[in-house]
Image 1 (cartoon, rainbow, N blue to C red):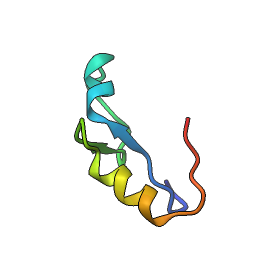
Image 2: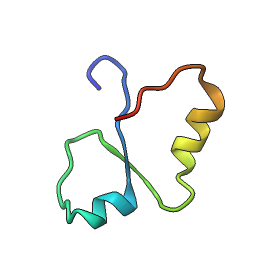
Image 3: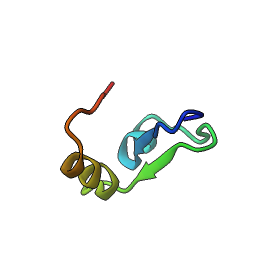
Image 4: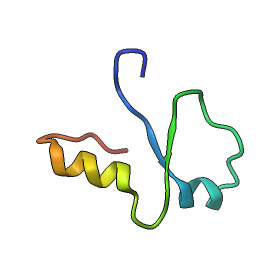
Length: 50
């Protein structure tokens, strides 16, 4: 993230694992449509996913 990367967490996954604190800068994408991820997928040629 310090070099311009983005970390986007699924709102549903955060809730499923009872995560109540995220690192500063982590974006939360609302489930089920995840518009942030959908926008990225429509614009990029390569994406890393873990």
